[in-house]
Image 1 (cartoon, helix red, strand yellow):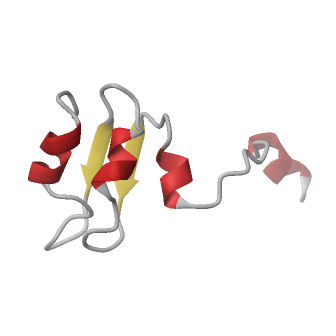
Image 2 (image 1 turned 135 degrees about the horizontal axis):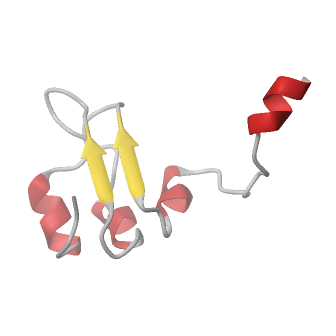
Length: 74
């Protein structure tokens, strides 16, 4: 890794899956495929997460699924 990459690199947190990355996360930015985000994973996110499910035409998670597991979210 060169000096420029080292300046912005962060330590590896050991998380390897999307489920692991969601644990305690404040934000999910989805630009992938339909139904990629499971409601069980959203349940492990912060108290009021920001979920940008941007896959089109079907998002990574539906509004109804979000409402099932979180009372507060953006």
